[in-house]
Image (cartoon, rainbow, N blue to C red):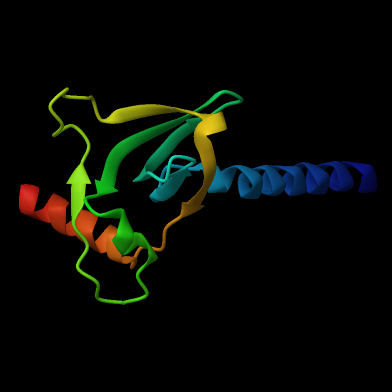
Length: 123
C-alpha cells in the first residue's frame, strides 16, 4: 500500500519537475534573442535544438540604440519581419553559434507594448 502511494507521489513529482523544466521554452510569451552581430530579434521561440533556434512572429527595432535606453517611456519603433525587399517569411532559423543569449520579456515591456500596438492597428 505504502509503496503504491510512494510510486504515485514520485510520478507526480516527476511530472511537476518536467513541467517546470520545459515551461521556459513554451511559446506563450515573447523572447528577445541577442545575436553576436549586435542584432536583436523579438518573437516567440518555437523550437530549440542543438543546431538551431526557431523564432516566429518576429519583430526588430528600427534603431538598436533604443535597446539600451533607461527611459521608461522611450519611443520604440519596431519593424515586422516580412516587410523587407527580399520578402522573408515570418520564421527564422537562427544558428545557435550566432546567439549570445535570449530572454523572456515581461508583458509590460516597451517592446511588447509596441508590438501589441502594431497588432491592434493592423486589425
